[in-house]
Amino acid sequence: MTNGRCGLCETADVPLVRSHIYPRWCTEVVQGDAKMMFTVSPHAHIRPTPLHGGGEYDRIVCDSCEQSFKAADDCFLSLYRNRLAGKVLRDPNGTSGVVYAGLDQALLQRFFLTCLFRAHLSRRPAHGNVDLGPYLARMRQVLLRPPETVPDMPVTLVRESHQFGRAIHMPHQTRFGGIRFWRLALPYFTGMVRVGGPVHGYVPMLGLALGRHADVWMPDLLDVPPDLLRTLGRAKAHHGDAIDRLVAKATRR
Ligand SMILES: [Zn+2]
Image (cartoon, rainbow, N blue to C red):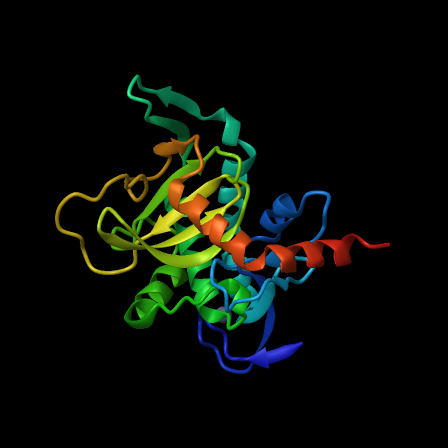
């Protein structure tokens, strides 16, 4: 057991337990029968790297803080398992959405906040390059309290129903509607987490932080978003051969 300072409660010299940044089952969904996983980047200088077989983990928090993540992890697992139970809304203009009834929005919001926080604590490159900077103290304060909606860290949820919706994207910053978000893509759902001061004006598609046990509306992406296609195209152009070699090595008997 490795001792150290807990990244959440900041107790010194406590045993640090294994934490997955995204829950392990997310990795298993992506791996399917292949039981292998590697990082792929659209940048030429970041080589594809095989990941730990059981999903990437790190030792970043104490046992009781790790346990405190469980309710939120379970809430997202329940959404994933019931992903087909949402009421689909299609409008003649081609936009579509889906409504999930009776979700605990505070827990769902907390799930994405904990993922972002765990990625910040981990120095493993596969967990992305998250730095919460001046918002770290506020994030700790939020996560050490019982779950409640956090208006200054809203999460926008999107269901990804297209052919690449099962992929995992480690947290990365992106702009959406002119506002900077952390984008966390998990199997079939993406959370857009905004960490920072209040936004003045219209924030599109803020589906969370409205209340508890309420209906949650989210856009339903049926087609692969163009920016994702461009990113995948770049990754394939830079690393196609390296990926083929990794797959060949992993499947060789
Ligand atoms: Zn702790």
